[in-house]
Image (cartoon, rainbow, N blue to C red; front, side, top):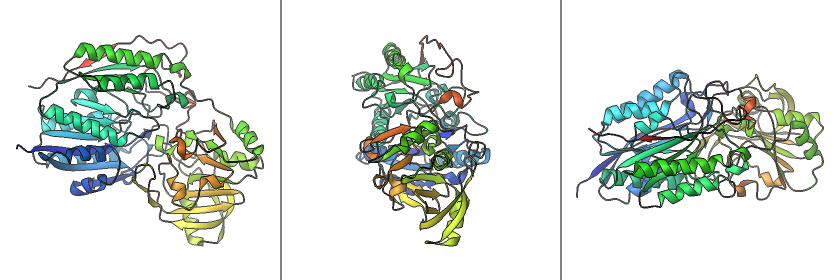
Amino acid sequence: MLRRRILIAECKQEVSTFNPHLSGYDDFGIRRGQELIDYHRTVRNEVGGALSVFDAMPNVGLVPAYSAFFITSGGTLAKTAWERIANELLDAIRTAPPVDGVYFCMHGAMASESELDPEGWLLAETRKIVGDKVPIVVSLDLHGILTDRMIEQSDAVVAYHTYPHVDFFETGQRAAKLLLRIMRGEVKPVTAKVTVPALVRGDELITATGSIRHAVNAAKEIEQSSRGLSAAIMWGNPFTDVPELASWAFVVTDNDPELAKREALRIANLFWEHHEKMRVPLKSLDEMAAIVKTHTSGTLGLVDAADATSSGASGDSNAILRKLIETGCTVRTLMPIVDEPAVKRAFAAGIGATITTQIGGTLDPQRFTPIEITAQVRLLADGRFRSESFGEEWLAGPTAVLEAGNFTLVVSSRAVNLYDRSFFYAHGQNPARFDAVVIKSPHCQPHMYADWCTQMVHVDAPGSSSANLPYLGHTRCARPMFPLDADVPFQPQAKLFTRVVA
C-alpha cells in the first residue's frame, strides 16, 4: 500500500490592533517535530482532531514541521517576532521531506507591524515550497480574517461552527478528512466567498440560541450534502483592524461553482437578515456599580469583554475595580488582572505579607491609570496550568493572589486566556464562592458562569476589545461598515476561487 506523507504546520494568534502593547516571540509556544505531535495528541484542539483522523489511516505518514501557538492573544505582533516565526516555520517546511499533502492550522486574525495578512503570506510561501500539485487544507477560527490570498493559496478552508467555541477537535477532523479526499483525487474543490460589511458582537452570535444559528445551520447542511465539502459563516475579529476585515460566508463544493456561489449567497443573506440585532446591550460603569450595590444573593457576573485577553486585549484593566472602590462596594469580588510589577512585589514580600502596590495600567497606560491598594499576599504560584476546556497548556507567568479588603485579585505576570475558569481554579479561587466575579471574556461556555450566576452584567468599560465598536476608531477596514457607519448597504456578490494545477 502506497504510504502518503502529510505535513503538519500550525501558526495561530488573534490580535487586537487597538492594544498598544506589541506581542512578541515569547508570547508563543513553539514546538517542532515529534514534540508537536506528542503535545497535540493530549489536547482536544484542531491539530489533535486532525491527528485522530491521520492516526487511524495505516497508509499515512506524518511529517510534523512547526507549531507556533499563542500562549494568549495580544497586541499587534512585533516585526522582529513575526520575521523570526515566519522564518522558522518556512525553514521547517523547506527541510522536511517531500509530502503529498499539507494540513495547516491557523486562527486567521493575526497581524504584524510589517504584514497585515500573515496567514495569506505564509500560505503563499508554503505553496512556493511544496509546489502547485500538493493540496493544502487550512482550518480557521470563525473569528479569522478570510482574505482572498488565503483562499487562493490553499485548496480548501474549514472553519469552526460554534460560538462559544466547542468544536476545535471536530474542525480539525473535518479538515483532515477533506485533505485525504483531495489527496485521493475523489473531489476537486471550488470555493465561493461573499463579503458582508458588518462587524458584530453579542448574544445573537451564540450558535446554540442566537439568530446566527440560521446561517450556521445552513452551512452545516451544505457540508452534509453530496456536493458540499466545507461551508461556514465567519464574522472576523472586529479588533484586528486590517484592510479585509468584515464578515464572510464561504462554501466549498466538489467542482460545482454555481452551487458554491448560490449557497454562499444564501448563507450571507441569512446572516444579514439578522445583523442589526448583533450588538451588545452594555451597562455603563455607573449602572454596573448600582447593580452591585443592590445585590443581595448569589454571584453577579461582571463581564468586562473590553479587556478580553482571548480577543487580544492587554488584561491590565482596573476600570471595574476603580469604580467599585469609588462607590464604596462592600461585596466580595473576584477579578483577574495582569500586572507584573505587582507580582514581583508580592513574591519579594512572601505569602502572608501585607504590601502596598499599584495595580493596573502597566500595559495600556493610555486607557488605565494605576490604583494604589494595600493587600495581603494569599498565594504565590508559577502560573503554569492546563485549561479546563480543552487541556491546553497555559502560561500566565509568576502569579499572585492578593486580598485587598473585599477584593480578591488574581494577578498574573502576563496575559492568559480567560474563556473558562481555569485561571481562577489553578490559583485556589472558586468564582461561585464570591458575590461578584469579573469575567474578562465576551462569552464562555454556559456552565462556566451564565448557568449559575444570578445576573450577567455586560459592562461598557474602556479597553482594546470593547463591544462598543465605534469607540475603538477603525482606520484600515473598508467603509461603510456596520455598526461603524449608518445605513450600510449590502449588495451581495459571490467571488469564485478555483485553483488551477499545472
